[in-house]
Length: 309
Image 1 (cartoon, rainbow, N blue to C red):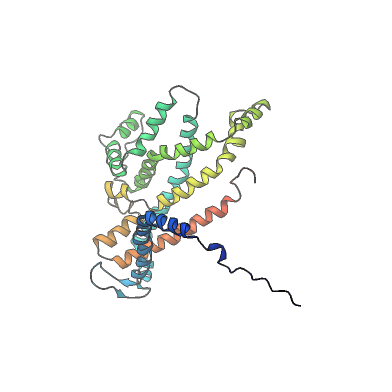
Image 2: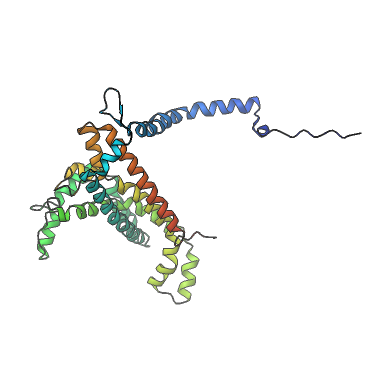
C-alpha cells in the first residue's frame, strides 16, 4: 500500500495573514499613505517624467515634441555645458577633501576635555543653522574687495587685495572657502565617531609609548574611515549640486567662472524655456554622480576599516 504523498506548502504559504493581522496591516498602510503618496508623486513620477521629456523639445507648455537623442547631441556641442561641468567638478574636487580635513579638525577640537567645549561646539555649529542664501549674502559682504574684513586682513599682512568674486582666477576658490562654513554640521558626525572609539585602544597605545601623531595615524584615522566614507559620498552629492551660492552672489560670472552645472540647468529650464534640454542635463548629472559614487565605494574597500572584519 502506497503512502500518501505529503502536500508541500506553496511559496506564499508563509504570507497568509489572519484577520487581525490584515486589519493591522491596513491601519499601518493608512497611516503611512501620506508618505507613500508623496514618495510616488514627488519623487518616482518626476524621475520617470524627466526621463521621458529629456527626449523631447518641451518648453513647459503645450505638448512635448519627440526628438529622440537630439538634446543629448546638442549637449555635446554646447560649450557652456562643458564649462559648467568643468566648474562643478573643479569645485567638488577641492571642496569635498578640504571639507573632510576641516570637519576632522573641528571634531578633534570639540572632543577635547575642556569646560568651555560646549560653547565652542555651539559657535562652530552656528553657521550650519544659517540658511545658505543668507550665508551667501554675509560671505559676499565679508569678502568685498574694498570693505570686506577678509581683504582688510590681507592688506594688514602685506598681501595683495583680491577681488574674490570679480576675478575668474579666484571665484571658484572663494566658493570652496564658503563651503567650509558648513563644516560644523559634519563635524558633529565626526565627533560622534570619535566618541565611539574605545578608550582602551588609546590607553594601550600610550602604554607602548605612542605619541599624539602615532595614536591619530594608527587608531583615530583607521577607526574613523567609515565616517569619512559617509562624508565623501554626502559631500560628492552636495558638491555636484552646488547652486545657491553662485545664484545669489555671482549669477554665473565673472566670465562663466562660477556657472556651475545646476545653475546652468536652472537657466535652461526656467529662463530659456528648454525643459527637455534641462531634463537631459539632469540625467547626465545623475549618471555622473552614480558613477563617481560607485567608484568611491569600490575604492573604499582598500582603506575603510570596519571593526570586526
